[in-house]
Image (cartoon, rainbow over all chains, first blue to last red; front, side, top):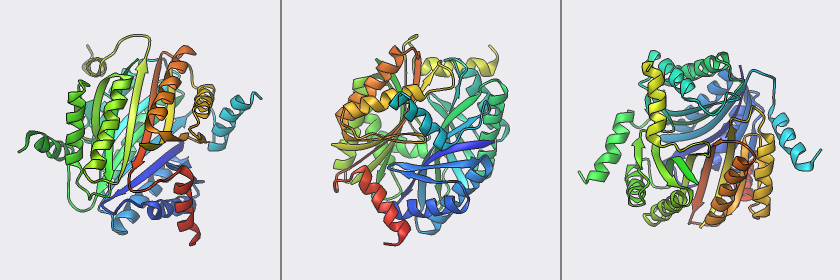
Length: 101
Length: 101
Length: 101
Length: 101
């Protein structure tokens, strides 16, 4: 089952700057071939369900190992079985409505 | 790695009533021994990371099989390595601040 | 427009324990007559849209005043115009499916 | 109080395709000068708290008027009082860690 996920990882107990941790997660997602796309409040990824969850688990393990004792992550997860759809397809679909094409 | 998760599954393309699907998920979480606790906008579960993710995948598969072609789920996921903490512990901690004990 | 919201406020830069801040928010929601109901990963509230947003803004202002320089909140917001529905109605609806009534 | 928000609006009861509604929300955010930035699972906006909440309320009202009887929105909301920060600043901060600059 393919999934498109939007992931926002918040390390706690490490101060207010968390960009270092977000960068580490992006690298993990890249190495897992999940096509990570950073935005201003999270990261989009896409791939097989199990691969996404394994990579996300690795993010938590790595961030704990970097010194954060507690992590709170918010995720949106989308699956569909009517047709294949990528992150790029979703953006194209909205943009076509905006431009009237 | 233990995780406390808060899960809100939204089946799309099946009308506005989704309680049937939420009930199915709760049953899946109960059978997986994840201590599900329903609230007004989701379900709390707790257990090992892989078991939570496997049960959630089963929820998506089941809801698709029930006829929903698309599902959008929002999740909060908490892990910590400084100490063990249960859902009940978290509630106790807030409630103790409210009562001044 | 009535709204049911599920709110999880995460103060950053204040260590790993956040129950004190959650308790303060619950008090703010109670004083705003938003019927707050705490669960293991957030708080359900219900009321008029503007009243919910005003109370949530007050939570952010209060938590900043208590010393947290940064706050990241995740929210689920539900509105409907087909019928009135309360938090209790939502729970009843799922529970009736679980018991087979 | 400035806020950066990430908003994902899910109209229910209108089928599986929701891009039309996402496009309408983006237009509302643009007209409110909230600098909307679409990604694969939501839209980033930034501005004054009250202006963001007013625009989001307008999105719900508009989507109901377009025929969706029920809407479930997930939001991430960030405020900070230690310094000014824009969506672009957040992306720059992560990207600088990725490139080693």
